[in-house]
Image (cartoon, rainbow, N blue to C red; front, side, top):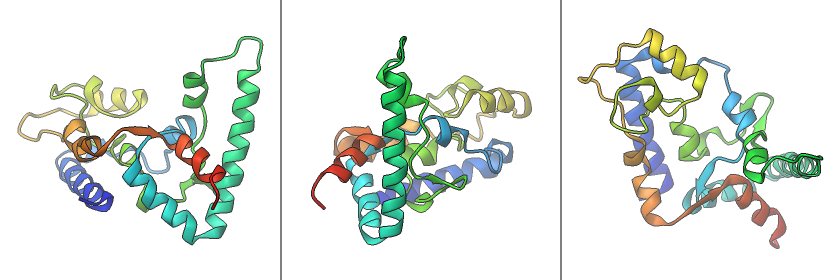
Length: 185
């Protein structure tokens, strides 16, 4: 199964959930997760599709490279502070290098983690806001406006990710970029 097939299955599952619960959609224009958690989990199969797009589009590749280098410099500065955060915490606060002008420059190819986050997916079978795979402000909003109904179950994150997880381990998007920009191309 190709990454595009898996992405399409995720899109269809989310479309069905959002048809049952239209209030679940993230608010238009919100990309706080992209601006503050810029190293989403990415699977090698997904990265190959993204890298192929970068190889085909030199202006995109250069723009991403410049944003990546800027992020790397910012990360170095954060880690050199007198009381530095952990690397995981520092990475968690970084914007995604694919965000440009408030939009994802690879939206059609974004990793499954990005597709599923904030889009009608449950972490576990329970029907509470804490189990929705989204940011805390959205969890709070959804709990107040959304009567969760068992007859319209939301897709489970594990089911959407099963194919990728069976194909091998995941890595952070930034680690793929590190290899991409420093391998001979």
